[in-house]
Length: 79
Image (tube, rainbow, N blue to C red; front, side, top):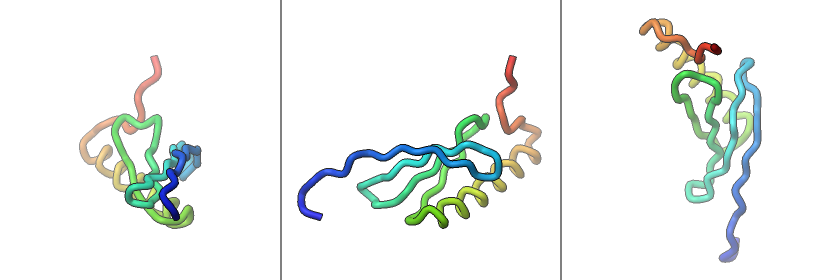
């Protein structure tokens, strides 16, 4: 690519019933996924959408396991 800039990309994806915001990081030329609607952070990176989905599944599983182990609600309670 010659000297031009790459516009930011934001999109939504669903992984195992959870919403993910997908962005492209031009500095590292990777996709970043971040779950929204969880009590804590769970983000992940990959170079392709299929790999991003797989990384997202792993990241979510680890997050939910840690929440169970620590007695933390994985999603905020709605008042």
